[in-house]
Amino acid sequence: MTPTADEIFRWPVRVYYEDTDAAGVVYYANFLRYLERARTEWLASLGFTLTALEREHGVVFVVHRLDIEYRQPVRLYDALEVTVGSVARGRSRLVAVQEVFRGEAQLVRAHVTLACLDPATWRPARIPAPVVAKMH
Image 1: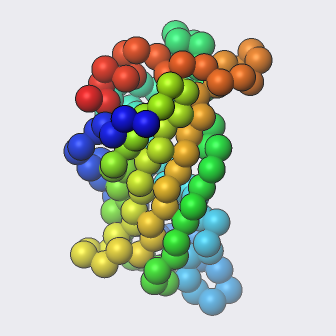
Image 2 (image 1 turned 60 degrees about the vertical axis):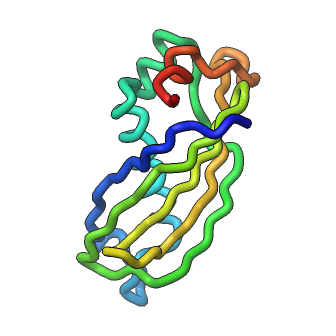
Image 3 (image 1 turned 180 degrees about the horizontal axis):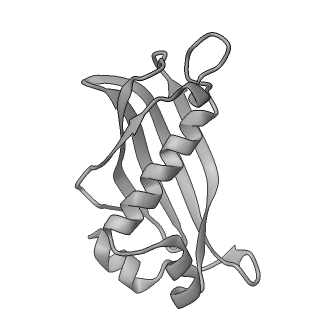
């Protein structure tokens, strides 16, 4: 896989009551939502929406693998920054390092592998050339 996208994309998130569990901390699965939103906005910052990728290029990206480490608790009203960085690329997959910060404190670190698929067959598909070009 070829390393790409040296710039780190940053997306702000605020923690709301609906994000927390009975202990008053963010429920662990909600971090998956934060990571997904940041990846969606990262793609948009490159000029691609998920619907346009499917409509114009005949591909969808799906999470194939996720390795996540929770380092510190996150609480109601915390202002967070979710990042997408260190993206590596293969023919039909991307691996992104994503992190969640509160100020300088790293709270979560994840490696997310996305598979590029043809939605008609759900088989691997080559990442479209325009996407590859924007990632350099």
